[in-house]
Structures are given as C-alpha cells and as structure tokens.
Length: 241
Image (cartoon, rainbow, N blue to C red; front, side, top):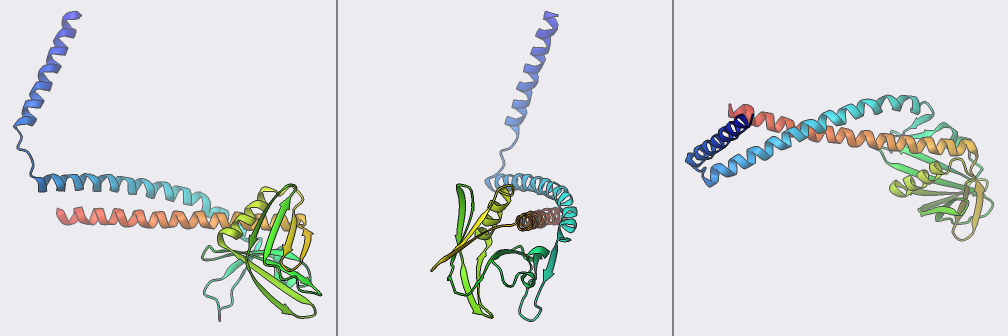
C-alpha cells in the first residue's frame, strides 16, 4: 500500500516535470498574438454570459407575460390619435367622466411605461394646490407637481405628478392598503379627504401594472442586447472559418 502511494506520487511528480519542460520548450507568443488570445478569451466569456442572460431573461419573461392580460381587464386604454403618440391605461374606477365633481386621485400607465398621477380637486374656490400628501397614521409621503386650473360650474384643479414621484406615491398607497389613508392637497389653502377602499384597490392595481410593465421592458431590453452580442460573436467566428 505504501509502495503504491509512493509510486503514484513519483509518477505524478514525473508528469508534472514533463509538462513544465514541454511548456518551457514552447515558443513564447508574440505580444500581438498574446493580445489576440486575451481578446478571444474575453469575447468567449462575454458570449457565454450573453447566452446565460438570454436564457434567464427569456424564462423570467415567460412567467410575467401571462400576468398582463388578466390585470388589464380592470383598465381602459385611452389615446387621442390627433395629439398623442402614446396611449395610456387608466383603471375603470378612476375614469375622469365618472368623477367630474369630486376630489380624487387618478393614475395612468402609458404604453411607453411612463407613470402619471393626477390629483383632481373641485370646489367653489381655488386652492392652488401644488403639493399632494398621502398619510397613514403617523407616516406620510408628499410630492410636488404641475398645476392646471379651469372653471366650469365651479373650480377644477388638476395636479400632475410624473414618473418616480408618481411611482413612490402609488407604492406608499399599496403598502398601506389595509390602513385608512388621508389625502391632503395643499397650496394657497388645503383640502383633505380619505381614499375609499375601492380607490385604494384601483391605485394598488395600477402600481402592480406599472411595475409589471417596467419589469417586462427591462427583460426585453436585456434580451435584445444579449441577442446582439451573441450574433456579433457568432458572425465573427463564422467569417474566420
């Protein structure tokens, strides 16, 4: 047994010395050749990583896409072909024509993945509200936006808040769904009201749609980039043959 171990160790040592001797006898590649070999190695690693990204992103995308259509059943698609390049999804409970003379929050997700919140205030006098605050107990979040005011049988104010600020407000409402949420619209003066249960549900569904569409968009972009990298590598090696 000891003899065999000694013999195996001797053989391994001999083989190692032989391999080192062979490599020492090999001509050292030129600087240009070494640079080419290094680049080929980096390209190979990038190719493998692009394939992994492609497979992972596609598998994840296939789990998200089926979630879109059931969620969209609660939304209406709106687009003014004359003045708008992109349409937008608005929850059926939060459509403007159903809420013309009350205070409420409306949220949109456009087909180019933009998120918008609109704060509607109606009354006899303008409050000039440039800020919107949502509160749940002692915690709150507030954001600022651009204001539009007009008068038709009273004063209508529409405060528009977009993108990350809009998403932050929707996230806050979604995270505090089970609590009583107070809305404060303020500027020159202020008004307060509470979100109804169906309003909280509609806004939470809008948040989920926005996040789902953003995730799908990021995965589609990742797949596109990975596909271009794979094609570039494969075309290069096809030409070299």
